[in-house]
Image (tube, rainbow, N blue to C red; front, side):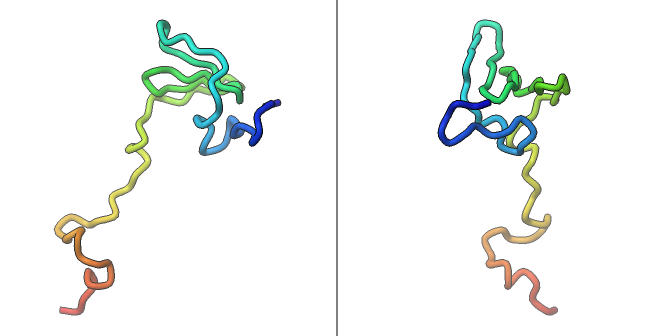
Length: 83
């Protein structure tokens, strides 16, 4: 159980990497978070139940908001003008 206030995110939550570091071994490339997750410097994770999460970057989760050929500086309502 997390002793911090507010509590650290659960290991199965989308914000799980925001938990506090309780043990850090940068020379070995890993840290243990308060919620039981071991995170590695290559951004991989080992969850408390033994499941592994492959290395990832925050940009891996972003989907493009602009369709190729559209001007991203135009307001959204002007992108769908009638021809």
